[in-house]
Image 1: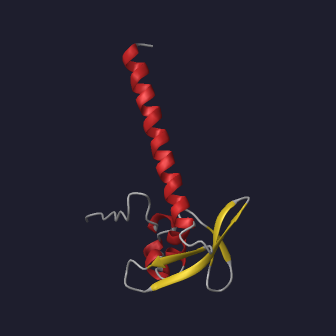
Image 2 (image 1 turned 180 degrees about the vertical axis):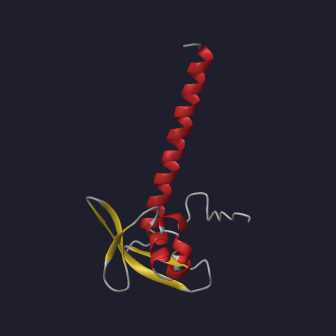
Amino acid sequence: MGKGHLLASLALAIAGLALLGLAKSSFAATSTDDPAGFVTATSRFGNGTIKARTRHSALGWSVELPGGNWVYCRRSCSETLRVETVDFFQSNAAGFGQITNECGIFGCLDLKYGH
C-alpha cells in the first residue's frame, strides 16, 4: 500500500470519527435539554409545541407520548416526539414512515421529486 493510500485512509478514518462524535454530541444535547429530563418539540408545519419527559435505559433514550406510552428515540428525542405528536399526520402522509421525516444533524432536508 502506497503512502498516498495510507494518508487517504487515515484522513477518511479521522473524518468518520469526527462525524460520529458530532452525531453523538447532537443526540446527547437533544436528549438532555432540560436537567429535569424533558425535551420540547416544535412543529415544522405550525401545529404548536409539546414538552415531554425523557428517560435513559439500558437500551437507550426514550420519550413519553401524551397517552403515557414510552417510545425509543430514533435520531433524537425531540425529533421523535415531534414526528409522533404535533406533526403526526404530515409525517405519515402518502405512506412515508416516521424515520424519514425526522430532521438530522444537518437540519431538515426536504427531498422533492419533480414529475
